[in-house]
Image (tube, rainbow, N blue to C red; front, side):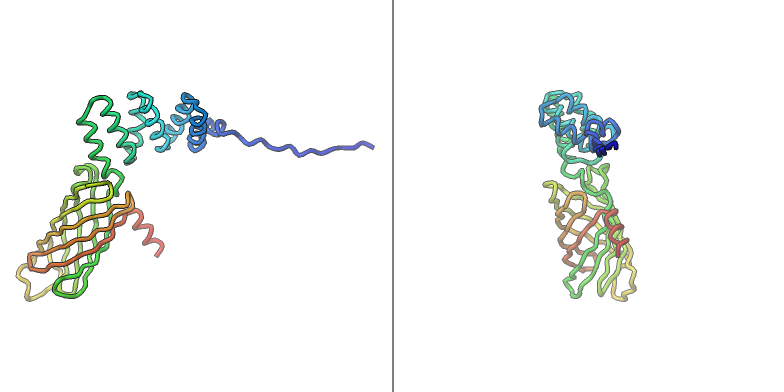
Length: 256
């Protein structure tokens, strides 16, 4: 009688290199990190380059910073710019260092100026609580637009609805925020628009107001703000607001 022995043949898992060659950006980046540990610099650079080409901005950043550290300024610029175009603060600062190394102080200063605000949200929705000095509690709803094209998010445009027990107004807003750090910015803005209520004691149908305050940013997520505001009709108020990136705002509303 014949005796047959059955053996289970284990399937070999593909290596990171094989997964990378198969088109996995994650595998390329992870492989590159392992190669860095082994001091296989040229192979690591190639792995990060493949991941960068597949759309991994973190791999672009790593490749660019590694090349910059080795003095390869020309080679470092392209991957750093790819990460910079995705609003990476770290890539922006690395580009500033690159321009410093080239002796371009003006270019370096420009990138450091942008770095303070580059990762902030372009469009935010904000909900605010107002405490008028003449009594009561009010609310404010805002849409703020702050693209990099407007002095690197220093200039802001928006729309505001303010309401409390004595007044309701719909306003256009324009403001300026000065980034002291990447998380703190004092700011001021002007508000102008019609009152939506019909108070017989109001001197003018148009609201003209101003606010001064400060914002505390949480990167691209949003901000907390506080300050004081006043209007031409004599009302003055303290406010506290929370701003959230518009994509996150829609996600929150979708789950309510």
